Amino acid sequence: MESTRIVKNVGSLFAKKWLCRQVLGRNLSVSAAARGKALTVRDALNTAIDEEMERDERVFVMGEEVAQYDGAYKITRGLWKKYGDKRVIDTPITEMGFAGIATGAAFAGLRPICEFMTFNFSMQAIDHIINSAAKTFYMSAGAVNVPIVFRGPNGAASGVAAQHSQCFGAWYAHCPGLKVISPYSSEDCRGLLKAAIRDPDPVVFLENEILYGLPFEVSDEVLSKDFVLPIGKAKVERAGNHVTLIAHSRAVQTSLEAAKELSGSGIDAEVINLRTLRPLDMDTILTSLAKTHHIVMVEQGWPTAGIGAEISARISESNAFFQLDAPILRVSGADIPMPYAKTLEGASIPQAQDVVRAVKTMLNQK
Image 1 (cartoon, helix red, strand yellow):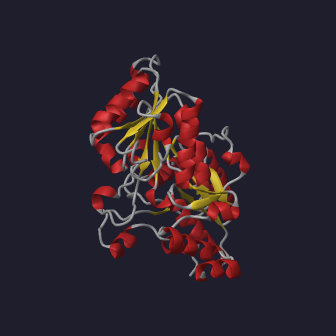
Image 2: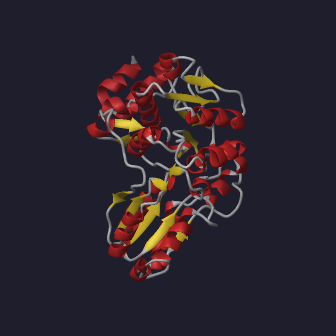
Image 3: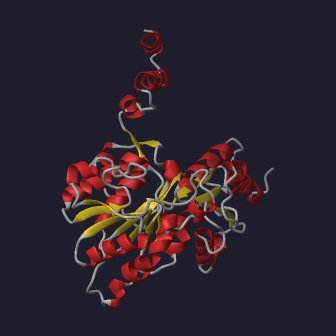
């Protein structure tokens, strides 16, 4: 066969993918087989949930289409068949209803994972997230823990316009009683979701739809069932000496692309992946500031009262302010509802060239 000859003679990853499409009629990933330790964000989340459900029978999942359909984005793939109706529960389209049920279950000692098909829909349930889940430990004088995870895709996706493209990082990070996680890589997602499920307090876990299919190289340690990352600890994704780029979620990818481009101009950028938005890891940020003396915040959310604004305020209110050689710059999403048109959508989200332009402006380079 012609397709077999191509694979035999060329042996490339592209040819293998082409053959899969020709024979099976669909686009299958063979990256894991080819490289051995590649893990997509989707599989990182799926395996984390699976292993925590296996580890603790109090853990269960509920949300729209999470069971028989395997989840809208296939994060819960295979879990219903493995654990059954009692632990993987399909709900009606009523975020307020199932978020309330999940929070009540957490009051009673269970460990629910409440999936929103998109965090835009969490606005229907925000009363339970804030007034029920986030405040009960305080209002009960520490007598009632609320071990619940609210998770799902957050922020801009592609072509879903104003009502489905908001970043809720700053919204939920504003609220005491919540822990807010905004992961980037497969390592982040696997280690931090496990930590969130085990945590005694409510955690808002903000994923990104565009990153679900992205594979990342991971170590054997990350693949271990015992792998857990600490909540509230950032990661330096790329070391540098001239400027610090601070980002979370998909904006980390943008920052890394910008850092690579800046290196061609002799600018050595450090990239910090926040991982957690509440609590913020200011120690890592201030350590980097003491080295580079320049900070550019990169986020896809709106600028007003955003994560970048919060970090800027904390620096300006501390002695770390005197480490700055230039004002902090923010590269954020445009301060408008997300347009539907593809060209306008791209212009509304920070791109690598926007970060490069901001850095060069800060450093007085052309």
